[in-house]
Picture 1 (tube, helix red, strand yellow):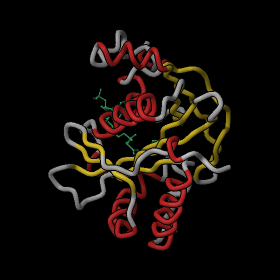
Picture 2 (tube, helix red, strand yellow; picture 1 turned 60 degrees about the vertical axis):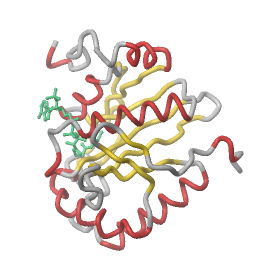
Picture 3 (cartoon, protein in one colour; picture 1 turned 180 degrees about the horizontal axis):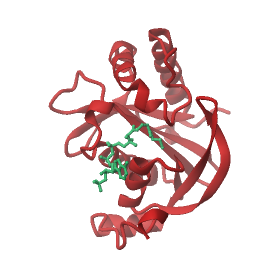
Picture 4 (cartoon, helix red, strand yellow; picture 1 turned 90 degrees about the vertical axis):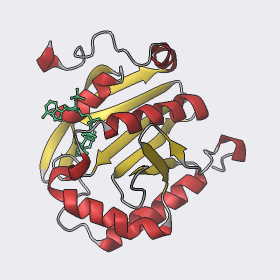
Length: 211
Ligand SMILES: CC(C)(COP(=O)(O)OP(=O)(O)OC[C@H]1O[C@@H](n2cnc3c(N)ncnc32)[C@H](O)[C@@H]1OP(=O)(O)O)[C@@H](O)C(=O)NCCC(=O)NCCS
Protein backbone atom coordinates (compact mmCIF):
# COMPACT_ATOMS: atom_id res chain seq x y z
CA UNK A 1 0.00 0.00 0.00
CA UNK A 2 1.32 3.42 -0.96
CA UNK A 3 1.19 5.95 1.90
CA UNK A 4 0.25 9.54 0.93
CA UNK A 5 3.25 11.84 1.39
CA UNK A 6 1.36 13.91 3.96
CA UNK A 7 1.15 10.84 6.25
CA UNK A 8 4.90 10.20 6.20
CA UNK A 9 7.05 11.39 9.05
CA UNK A 10 9.59 13.95 7.77
CA UNK A 11 13.12 12.51 8.12
CA UNK A 12 14.33 15.33 10.36
CA UNK A 13 16.54 15.57 13.42
CA UNK A 14 14.68 16.12 16.68
CA UNK A 15 16.19 17.68 19.80
CA UNK A 16 15.39 17.15 23.48
CA UNK A 17 17.14 18.66 26.48
CA UNK A 18 20.28 16.50 26.10
CA UNK A 19 19.64 14.36 23.04
CA UNK A 20 19.59 14.50 19.30
CA UNK A 21 17.49 11.76 17.71
CA UNK A 22 17.61 11.34 13.96
CA UNK A 23 16.98 8.85 11.16
CA UNK A 24 19.80 6.44 10.29
CA UNK A 25 22.24 7.22 7.48
CA UNK A 26 24.46 4.80 5.61
CA UNK A 27 27.53 6.13 7.39
CA UNK A 28 26.08 5.15 10.82
CA UNK A 29 26.89 1.45 10.34
CA UNK A 30 30.23 1.51 12.18
CA UNK A 31 28.90 3.55 15.15
CA UNK A 32 25.86 1.29 15.46
CA UNK A 33 27.99 -1.84 15.28
CA UNK A 34 30.36 -0.51 17.99
CA UNK A 35 27.44 0.26 20.34
CA UNK A 36 25.83 -3.16 19.85
CA UNK A 37 29.12 -5.02 20.23
CA UNK A 38 29.92 -3.20 23.48
CA UNK A 39 26.44 -3.81 24.91
CA UNK A 40 25.84 -7.28 23.47
CA UNK A 41 25.67 -9.17 26.79
CA UNK A 42 23.05 -6.81 28.26
CA UNK A 43 21.02 -6.48 25.06
CA UNK A 44 20.98 -10.27 24.62
CA UNK A 45 18.97 -10.64 27.83
CA UNK A 46 15.88 -9.21 26.15
CA UNK A 47 16.47 -8.69 22.43
CA UNK A 48 16.52 -11.81 20.23
CA UNK A 49 18.71 -10.33 17.48
CA UNK A 50 21.52 -9.24 19.82
CA UNK A 51 23.45 -12.49 19.82
CA UNK A 52 27.22 -12.95 19.86
CA UNK A 53 26.87 -13.64 16.11
CA UNK A 54 25.75 -10.04 15.40
CA UNK A 55 28.13 -8.74 12.74
CA UNK A 56 28.99 -5.54 10.92
CA UNK A 57 26.94 -6.96 8.03
CA UNK A 58 24.00 -7.25 10.46
CA UNK A 59 24.41 -3.58 11.35
CA UNK A 60 24.56 -2.69 7.64
CA UNK A 61 21.41 -4.72 6.99
CA UNK A 62 19.61 -2.93 9.82
CA UNK A 63 20.55 0.52 8.49
CA UNK A 64 19.50 -0.41 4.94
CA UNK A 65 16.17 -1.82 6.12
CA UNK A 66 15.61 1.15 8.43
CA UNK A 67 16.10 3.67 5.61
CA UNK A 68 13.67 1.73 3.42
CA UNK A 69 11.03 1.37 6.16
CA UNK A 70 11.17 5.11 6.82
CA UNK A 71 10.71 5.92 3.12
CA UNK A 72 7.76 3.53 2.96
CA UNK A 73 6.20 4.88 6.18
CA UNK A 74 6.28 1.47 7.86
CA UNK A 75 8.53 2.22 10.82
CA UNK A 76 10.64 5.11 12.04
CA UNK A 77 13.98 4.16 13.63
CA UNK A 78 15.99 6.89 15.28
CA UNK A 79 19.65 6.86 16.25
CA UNK A 80 19.98 8.40 19.72
CA UNK A 81 22.96 10.73 20.19
CA UNK A 82 24.06 13.05 22.99
CA UNK A 83 24.18 16.61 21.67
CA UNK A 84 27.57 17.11 23.34
CA UNK A 85 29.02 14.06 21.54
CA UNK A 86 27.00 13.56 18.36
CA UNK A 87 29.41 11.16 16.63
CA UNK A 88 28.72 8.41 19.16
CA UNK A 89 25.67 6.13 18.91
CA UNK A 90 24.03 5.72 22.33
CA UNK A 91 21.01 3.66 21.37
CA UNK A 92 17.96 3.17 19.20
CA UNK A 93 14.38 4.26 19.56
CA UNK A 94 11.73 3.24 17.06
CA UNK A 95 8.09 3.99 16.42
CA UNK A 96 5.93 1.89 14.16
CA UNK A 97 2.30 1.57 13.17
CA UNK A 98 0.40 -1.34 14.66
CA UNK A 99 -2.89 -0.37 12.97
CA UNK A 100 -3.31 2.66 10.73
CA UNK A 101 -7.10 2.48 10.82
CA UNK A 102 -7.15 2.43 14.64
CA UNK A 103 -4.26 4.91 14.85
CA UNK A 104 -2.26 2.71 17.18
CA UNK A 105 1.50 2.42 17.34
CA UNK A 106 4.33 0.89 19.27
CA UNK A 107 7.66 2.12 20.63
CA UNK A 108 10.82 0.05 21.13
CA UNK A 109 14.27 1.06 22.41
CA UNK A 110 17.65 0.02 23.68
CA UNK A 111 20.49 2.02 25.22
CA UNK A 112 24.24 1.38 25.05
CA UNK A 113 25.30 -0.20 28.35
CA UNK A 114 27.86 2.49 29.17
CA UNK A 115 25.09 5.11 29.01
CA UNK A 116 22.31 3.40 30.97
CA UNK A 117 21.04 4.79 34.26
CA UNK A 118 21.15 8.42 33.11
CA UNK A 119 17.53 8.81 32.04
CA UNK A 120 18.31 8.52 28.33
CA UNK A 121 15.62 5.92 27.53
CA UNK A 122 13.04 8.00 29.41
CA UNK A 123 14.03 11.22 27.61
CA UNK A 124 14.00 9.53 24.19
CA UNK A 125 10.66 7.80 24.84
CA UNK A 126 9.17 11.10 25.99
CA UNK A 127 10.12 12.51 22.57
CA UNK A 128 8.79 9.39 20.79
CA UNK A 129 5.44 9.99 22.50
CA UNK A 130 5.43 13.59 21.31
CA UNK A 131 6.11 12.39 17.77
CA UNK A 132 3.55 9.58 17.97
CA UNK A 133 0.69 11.53 19.48
CA UNK A 134 1.65 14.86 17.91
CA UNK A 135 3.15 14.36 14.45
CA UNK A 136 1.56 10.96 13.70
CA UNK A 137 -1.82 11.65 15.42
CA UNK A 138 -1.83 8.28 17.18
CA UNK A 139 -4.70 7.43 19.49
CA UNK A 140 -2.86 4.72 21.40
CA UNK A 141 0.79 3.83 21.87
CA UNK A 142 2.20 0.73 23.51
CA UNK A 143 5.44 -0.61 24.88
CA UNK A 144 6.02 -4.36 25.17
CA UNK A 145 8.37 -5.14 28.03
CA UNK A 146 9.76 -8.53 29.00
CA UNK A 147 8.38 -9.46 32.41
CA UNK A 148 11.27 -8.91 34.83
CA UNK A 149 12.93 -6.17 32.79
CA UNK A 150 12.82 -3.78 35.74
CA UNK A 151 14.66 -0.91 34.05
CA UNK A 152 12.26 -0.88 31.09
CA UNK A 153 9.20 -1.28 33.35
CA UNK A 154 10.49 1.76 35.22
CA UNK A 155 10.75 3.79 31.99
CA UNK A 156 7.10 2.93 31.21
CA UNK A 157 5.96 3.79 34.73
CA UNK A 158 7.79 7.13 34.82
CA UNK A 159 6.03 8.18 31.61
CA UNK A 160 2.56 7.26 32.86
CA UNK A 161 1.96 4.11 30.77
CA UNK A 162 -0.66 1.77 32.20
CA UNK A 163 0.27 -1.91 32.54
CA UNK A 164 -2.56 -3.63 30.70
CA UNK A 165 -1.69 -7.31 30.75
CA UNK A 166 0.71 -10.07 29.88
CA UNK A 167 1.29 -11.89 26.62
CA UNK A 168 2.48 -15.33 27.64
CA UNK A 169 5.62 -16.76 26.04
CA UNK A 170 5.45 -14.17 23.28
CA UNK A 171 9.07 -14.20 22.28
CA UNK A 172 12.02 -16.57 22.38
CA UNK A 173 15.29 -15.02 23.49
CA UNK A 174 18.43 -17.14 23.69
CA UNK A 175 16.36 -20.32 23.56
CA UNK A 176 14.09 -19.22 26.44
CA UNK A 177 10.43 -18.25 26.04
CA UNK A 178 9.63 -14.90 27.63
CA UNK A 179 6.38 -13.31 28.77
CA UNK A 180 5.81 -9.72 27.67
CA UNK A 181 3.83 -7.14 29.60
CA UNK A 182 1.88 -4.65 27.49
CA UNK A 183 1.91 -1.01 28.60
CA UNK A 184 -0.49 1.40 26.91
CA UNK A 185 -0.98 5.15 26.83
CA UNK A 186 -3.93 6.92 25.16
CA UNK A 187 -3.86 10.31 23.50
CA UNK A 188 -5.99 12.08 26.14
CA UNK A 189 -3.92 10.53 28.95
CA UNK A 190 -0.78 11.76 27.20
CA UNK A 191 -2.20 15.29 26.87
CA UNK A 192 -3.18 15.33 30.54
CA UNK A 193 0.32 14.18 31.54
CA UNK A 194 1.98 16.69 29.22
CA UNK A 195 0.01 19.51 30.89
CA UNK A 196 1.47 18.54 34.28
CA UNK A 197 4.98 17.98 32.91
CA UNK A 198 4.64 14.20 33.39
CA UNK A 199 4.09 14.32 37.12
CA UNK A 200 2.75 10.79 37.27
CA UNK A 201 0.41 10.61 40.28
CA UNK A 202 1.57 7.24 41.49
CA UNK A 203 4.78 6.46 39.64
CA UNK A 204 5.16 3.04 41.28
CA UNK A 205 1.68 1.78 40.53
CA UNK A 206 2.57 -0.06 37.32
CA UNK A 207 5.15 -2.30 38.93
CA UNK A 208 3.49 -5.18 40.80
CA UNK A 209 6.60 -5.60 42.98
CA UNK A 210 6.39 -2.02 44.20
CA UNK A 211 2.74 -2.12 45.25
C1 LIG B 1 15.95 -0.83 29.54
C2 LIG B 1 16.87 0.28 29.07
C3 LIG B 1 16.39 0.78 27.72
C4 LIG B 1 16.83 1.43 30.10
O1 LIG B 1 17.60 2.52 29.61
P1 LIG B 1 18.09 3.71 30.57
O2 LIG B 1 18.55 4.83 29.72
O3 LIG B 1 19.01 3.19 31.59
O4 LIG B 1 16.70 4.09 31.29
P2 LIG B 1 16.42 5.34 32.25
O5 LIG B 1 17.71 5.76 32.89
O6 LIG B 1 15.64 6.34 31.50
O7 LIG B 1 15.44 4.71 33.34
C5 LIG B 1 15.77 3.48 33.96
C6 LIG B 1 15.10 3.38 35.31
O8 LIG B 1 15.14 2.02 35.73
C7 LIG B 1 15.73 1.94 36.99
N1 LIG B 1 16.40 0.63 37.07
C8 LIG B 1 17.48 0.22 36.39
N2 LIG B 1 17.76 -1.06 36.70
C9 LIG B 1 16.81 -1.47 37.58
C10 LIG B 1 16.54 -2.68 38.31
N3 LIG B 1 17.31 -3.75 38.12
N4 LIG B 1 15.47 -2.71 39.15
C11 LIG B 1 14.67 -1.64 39.31
N5 LIG B 1 14.88 -0.43 38.66
C12 LIG B 1 15.93 -0.38 37.82
C13 LIG B 1 16.67 3.12 37.06
O9 LIG B 1 17.01 3.44 38.40
C14 LIG B 1 15.80 4.19 36.40
O10 LIG B 1 14.75 4.60 37.27
P3 LIG B 1 14.84 5.98 38.12
O11 LIG B 1 15.01 7.10 37.11
O12 LIG B 1 13.56 6.03 38.84
O13 LIG B 1 16.05 5.85 39.01
C15 LIG B 1 18.34 -0.22 28.95
O14 LIG B 1 18.74 -0.75 30.18
C16 LIG B 1 18.52 -1.30 27.87
O15 LIG B 1 18.69 -0.98 26.72
N6 LIG B 1 18.49 -2.57 28.27
C17 LIG B 1 18.71 -3.69 27.35
C18 LIG B 1 17.70 -3.78 26.22
C19 LIG B 1 16.27 -3.60 26.67
O16 LIG B 1 15.88 -4.08 27.74
N7 LIG B 1 15.48 -2.88 25.87
C20 LIG B 1 14.10 -2.61 26.24
C21 LIG B 1 13.21 -3.66 25.74
S1 LIG B 1 11.52 -3.27 26.19
